[in-house]
Image (cartoon, rainbow, N blue to C red; front, top):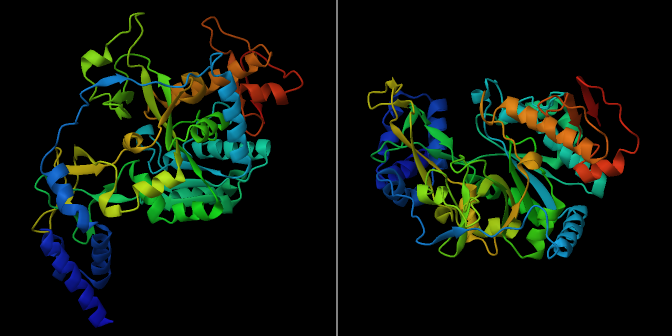
Length: 478
C-alpha cells in the first residue's frame, strides 16, 4: 500500500511539474494523512491534458468575443401558428405526445445554485414560491412531470444536476418530502463538474493548504457532467432519445412540451431552443441571431448597441428573440460533444472574481478586489454546433418568470405575481370569470396544480364544473 501511495504521489508530482503547477504540493509536509488524500483527490480532478492550452487562451489573456461579420435576426417558429403552420404544429404535437408516451424523453434540471441572493439558506430549488401553497420550485417541477405522466400514460425520468455545495442538501430535501410523489427510481441526481480558479498568471489557487479552489463549470458543463456521471449511458440503455432541459429558477417552465419535442424530432434538429420577445432593447438576456450563417446566441453585453436598438421598417425591434434557457437536446448530440473530454466542444468564458486563497507562506488571504480567473461554459454555445437548430417562440406570460433576485426585476415578488396572473388567465380562458382589481390585476390569489392541468387547454378539458371564485380570497385547485 505504501509503495502504491508513493507511486501515486510521484506520478502526480511529475504531472504538476510538467504543467507548472508544482506549487499545489508546497505545503505537503505540513499535512496529515487525511489532508494529503484530499489534496491528491482534488488534483486528480483537474484535466491536465487540456490545461496548458486552456490557461494560455483563457486565463493569461482574454480574447475578445469574436463577433460574426454578418449578424441577422434569427428565423423562428411563432408562438401561434399561421394557416401555413397549423398542420405542422398538429403533426408535431402528435409526434411529441407519442415520444412522451414511449418514454423517449426525460427531464433535466440544472439545479446547482444556492438561494443566497434570495436571502434563503438552502438549494435554490427548495425556495418556496407558489402564490397559494408556497410550494418550492422542485415540487412544481415534480408535479409537472407527474401531471405529464398522468395525462399521457408515461413514466418519465427526471435528472437533476446538483453542485458539490448543495448535493447533500438537495437529496435530503427530496427524501424529507417523499420525492414529491415521484418514484425515487425516476429521480436521478448527479453533481456538476468543477473548474479550478486561477491566478492571472495561470497558477491554480489553493482554497486551503490541502484543497484546490474549485468553482462550478457553468451550465454548459452540464453536458460533460451528463457523460461523466453515467447519466448519458443510462439514458441510452433506457431508450431515451431527447433531453428536455430547463434551469431551476423558472417556475413557469413547461417542463415537458409535446409541441416543442415534436418539432425538434420532425425537423431533425439536434438542439432546439425557446425564445420570447424582449421587454426592451437592452434586456439582460442573450440574443438569438444568425451569425455568418449559423444560429447562435450573443450575450446582451456583447451585442453592439446599434444592433440592440435597430428597428425594422415597421418600427419593431429587429433583434427581438431573447434566450431563456429552455432547450431540447438529442441525446446523441450530447454524446458527440462530450466524446473527448480533453477537447470539449464548447468554449470557456472568462470572469474575474474575488476568490480566497492560500499564499506561498500558507496564510489564507481574503481579497478585497477581484483577484482570480474563473472559467465557465454556457449551454447556448452548443447551438451553432448543432444540426438544424430550431428556435420556437413562446409567451413570457405562459413560460418565463425567473426567480433571480431578492427584490425588483426577476424576484420572488414578480414571479409569484406572474404565476398568479397565469392561473387567472387560464380560468378566464376556460370561461370562468376571475374578479379583477381596478388596475386589472386578479383580485385574489390563484394557483392551479399541474396535477390537475398542464396548460389552459387542458384546464378546459378537466374543469367540468364551475369553480367557486370569491374576490380577495385564495383559491387552489389540484
